[in-house]
Amino acid sequence: MTVEIPKGRVQTLSASEQLHLKQVWAHLFQHWGIAVQSEKVLNGAGTASTGAGAAGNGSGTSNASKEEKQNSKPGKKAASKLFGKFRKGSSNSENSKASSDRVRNGSFTSRRSAESVEQMYPAGMIHTALKDLKADEVSENFWDMLRTDYPDNLILRFLRARKWDTDKALGMIAHTLHWRLKESHPDAIIRGGELEAYKNDETGYIKNIELCKATLHGFDLKGRPVVVVRPKLHHSSDQTEEEMKKYCLLIIEQARMFLKEPVDSATILFDLTGFSMSNMDYAPVQYLISCFEAHYPECLGHLFIHKAPWIFPPIWNIIKNWLDPVVASKIVFTKSTDDLAKYVPNNYIPKYLGGDDDYDYDTFVKPEESADAKLKDTETRDKLLKERKTIIDSFIDATKNWIESSDDETSAKWLKAKISISQELTENYRQLDPYIRSRSTYDVNGTLKV
Image (cartoon, rainbow, N blue to C red):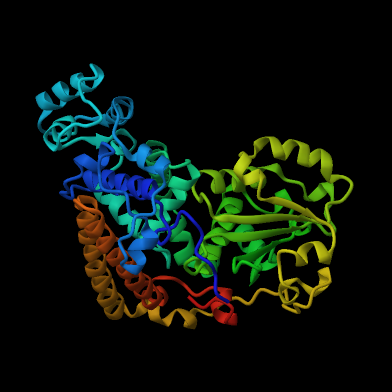
């Protein structure tokens, strides 16, 4: 299946979208201590008149709209807003204060020189969203949270979710990185897999896994992996809240393993067949909503609520008030096989729902510890990690050159290089995966091909 690359991805960026992506990378590099000449980009004056689509084919032809070009021009109001989001670094504090004063007084015009731009954005300024996070931890976790996704497309999820507001996207990224590092540790959960639950004797977590409350199988018509959730199997007394959260994160992170560029979202089918009030539990619903809205933006394709019984409308009246409008717009109520077939091919609609898929949704196959033999091969793991570090360094160098590009042709060249290096990073992860992640039931039954 050939999947069309949607708008707002690194391969299809408009001019103004490219500029916002450059700004996010510039802020991250500033925080990580990576030297980059980003003053013009951070003040909206960087090269951004060439779309990424042109970069992909090397044509260098401008396809930016008049509105995008206007949005990319630096103005006093935009500059002042952006500057207000920084804090003082370890140097140039006097220059920083003077520059800040000049911005507030409106002494910069929209046609300022390169020198005046550099004065306005002095070195050593760190975005406030990142100031409480340790640079080395943030950098390490950012690269760790990648699976087969491209680094740019991961960041672009946050930018799209925040309507291309650089500051808001950075705040969201910082919040997510803190959540992943200090609170929920989803990378450890996916790497430990189902076997980790048995090793730790987490009874409720194990029960969720063995009941197959949520099962990944098949793809919708847009190539997105489908998660079938059966609430009739859920009872709040079966697990602790912590065990429930771990199970939710295991499923979400397992779904990410099925994503292949350019597909970057999954579809969820809530099958309410046999659902009763004894199965209702608002806590996991709230948790899932918060995860998708705050930490996995743009990762939800559709959410089908299938065969809702007569008792469901009052429940829905409560739930819908918790939803962000964007998430709410992705929810579709379906009643029949024909309704589902508008979105999911028949061969991936379960037979018990009237489709042709005879996949066993009731049997969990526990992976044997022998399936994790490669986890013990630290020599190969370290070799692949060393290669990964080299690829990441190449990506960082290409991104620096992209940010610092002084003309459209150079910017397009480096963006094309970044996409190529991203493909190398994806291939490296595919090789590395069995050496860092415990095998799941999907690896064992062959449905997951990283």
